[in-house]
Image 1 (cartoon, rainbow, N blue to C red):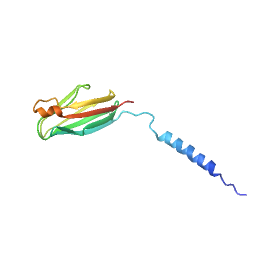
Image 2: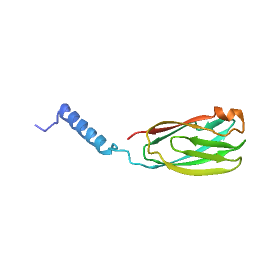
Image 3: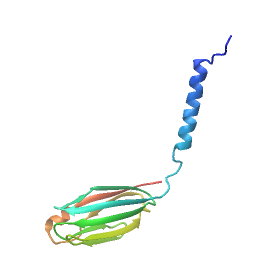
Length: 125
């Protein structure tokens, strides 16, 4: 009689190799990387409203505005960058502290600037 592998044996082999392949290809640790974002401030809002990165990523921000001067401020990271209409300010920082951090405009050019809110989310390792 010819050899016929049992379905049970084939399924077990497929499961084993599938798990092995998943373990090999799954990231074991998140290596720090570089993340770039274009952030615009316009009509009293930041776009995007959330910047999400991993801990220890180097974050590069290109910050623009088209209406009035605005700032990109994150107190915990000691960042306060001002941009003029039609200009671009580019800066980098290492997201070395996990957590959720408010981003806001600290200028008093217009009362509504105080309502400008966004958030930096740094996922821990």
